[in-house]
Length: 381
Image (tube, rainbow, N blue to C red; front, side, top):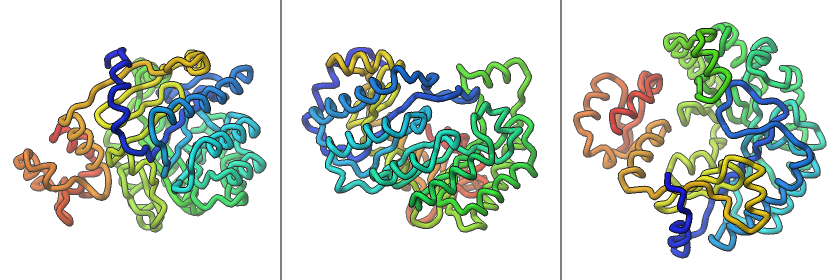
């Protein structure tokens, strides 16, 4: 990516209303050894200043774009690591600055160790209507391996607190392929989750990302990844959740009818979105940019009236097409046949191998294809 941000200003006047906003809150009480997202240990002396910077940045964005959000997503990090009063300050600031009459979905990622009944009530009162709860596992031994600060018991209590506060759209985040995790353990985790009846489940296979402690341990041979075992985990996930009434609408995401993530669907469909906060990406028109990956530098820049953008990228039609195919293939809607016209041979080969099928003018992954989704996507890139 280029570092020159001046060109970014040139195309903004011709852009339509922005409907999707992502806000990155990087603070964590503890750094999970597998997480590759930008994050930093919670520093209470910095958080209020950071919250002010977020609202100042939002104000700056309003000068550049018409913003009429349909979705807002607070991710991290751990947004609920902020105090109740700081979250209240942030959310009220969004209400003051934006017309939220078209808002359909407002999600906040929550760590079970930082959700209280009072915090849940305040979030609900201020318009948040979807919570993504980072449970990861219902096994305390595995939670310890993952470096999580919560216990399984705390996670369950947090879930009940959220329900009691009035949240009727809760996602439970889970992970499989963990060091020491057995098939029976994973089956038990899924059954426990189904018994709680969340509205949405995200189930991710552990990946060993660079710049993480887990990556180093994998490189040293302490952890091993078993593709065959991961495929079994994935097959069990699909079977149990689909049998329980969840629609498998994206490779890692399952929802009860009417509860698929509107915000994530916008990403997968290539819609424009604004990112606010350190490290956050924005994609508008044919441009993409990322804010600096340091919350102190981000706050300094915004509060002093400077741009927090660290890098920019000019997109091409080919880049957009490639991204559209790769992301659409992961969804239950699939890719339109017209998108794959230039790949007739590759498409036919995938059909012959039982990886793709045609449905309603689109090509969608079969059950076997879902297990090899990344490899199928590579055939068209």
